[in-house]
Amino acid sequence: MDKACVYLDYAATTPVDPRVAQEMAGCLTVDGVFANPASVHAHGRRAAEWVEQARGQVAALIKAEPAEILWTGGATEANNLAILGAARFYGRRGRHILSVATEHKSVLGPLAALAREGFQIEYLPTDEQGRVAPAGLAAALRSDTVLVSIMHVNNETGTVQDLAALAVVLAKSQALFHVDAVQSAGRLALDLGTLPVDLLSLSAHKLYGPKGVGALYVRRRPRVRLAPVLFGGEQEQGARPGTVPVHQVVGMGAAYRLAAEQGARDSAHARTLLGRLWAGLEPLGGILRNGSAEAPHILNLSFVGVHGEALAAELPRLSVATGSACTAASGSPSHVLRALGRPDALAHASLRFSCGRYSTEQDIDSAVEMIRSALLRLRALSPVWRAYREGAPLATLYKEAST
Amino acid sequence: VSAQVSERFRNPQRAGRLEGERVARGSGGSVAAGTLIELSLACEQGRILEAAFEAFGCPSAIACGDWLAQWLIGKSLEEAAALRGLQVAEALALAPEKTGVALVAEDALQRAVCSARSMVG
Image (tube, rainbow over all chains, first blue to last red; front, side, top):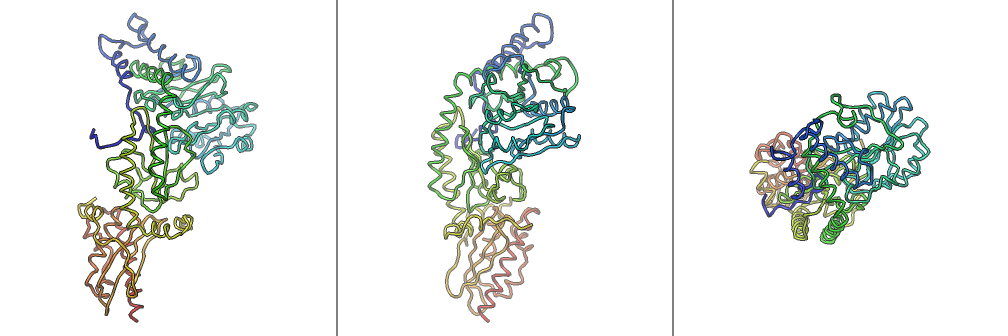
């Protein structure tokens, strides 16, 4: 990769830690632990041992029991299995499900599928940073609420939900509590020994492990049951058929072991770098933070006076997530920023910065310089920026079409 | 993005806002719709002596504003009024989905010409 390019998109995916890659490589070739862990012969038993060791490593990071961890093909599958599996298994208890409009699409998608099956999905209100208030959850909770799905750290804005306070509201309810913890695991403390969450989705590749593997925590005491989403063999307690990919889960286990060792240090490093980024950008003016910026590794900013597509075009050497990605027109902005009340044009002109283990001060300083020069150029010819500088209020400048 | 758009986006020649008594202005589009172009024209006896643009928009919008402002210099108001957005789109080899941006440029031009004529009148 071109050394002049800066990668600040760790919330999208992280590079695999070389120590993880090395352990994975030991599970592929004939002299390694390549066998099918479901096989009862010596090769298979050895592979099964490695799989169980990895399961223990994943469980240890979130203080769960190894038997509470199910391997999946990624966090999208974990979210699907948790939501579809729990709703369908417990559907006779009730047909009402609560979630939030700012959830990841791998949560919103299965919820939409359940709505087509007759479940009633209700989205909880949030404050302007995307936080769900415990009182709001209490008010929306019904006797027939069967599932509540709320992510821990929002992937776009880094807003952190107070899971403990939300769990208190659910304590006396029959509703199961599912948490998408993809962005928080290994970055914020998670203790399933004390946090009464029933289902929790995990990913490997957001935490220096490989893509294509994830896990679902399923509480054993009290036992949470799931209707299977996939059908086939008896692997993973019958909840998730398919040959367990030893190299993938060993990679996830190694990544989670390393996160347990150095996650706090990684988070402090990321927080320091994002602080440096904000300190470099803030003096440029007209930059709004989206979300609460509480997560250590995510900072989402909207840039006043510039168009999202022009901004992205000015930053070819900065690998960050852009509000204009995948949307040619400003008509389809981020569903998350829209839920937080940002005008579409400001949501469109947003950048999500996320850094991690291998990010450097040099990366941050280069990013600041690239953005400074892009803003200088684009704002110089922007009538919106001129009006903003002359004192026009943002609400007027970015007034949405009335239709 | 075409080479023409790319070049004008990178190095616009006519970016800015003209000031003065003889300057007429016109704008097209809106922030909410994703493109806002403002044209300034300095005219004398029905002829455009100077033109400049400001744009909030994608690279194609900036290129349209720049092409238009440059093309307008030396033209009569009649010639200016006859220009259509599709000609701008053609000159810049805009991608088909960006044709709307050129129409916003046309709106800005029509309003600027209208304003210039009312000043003359």
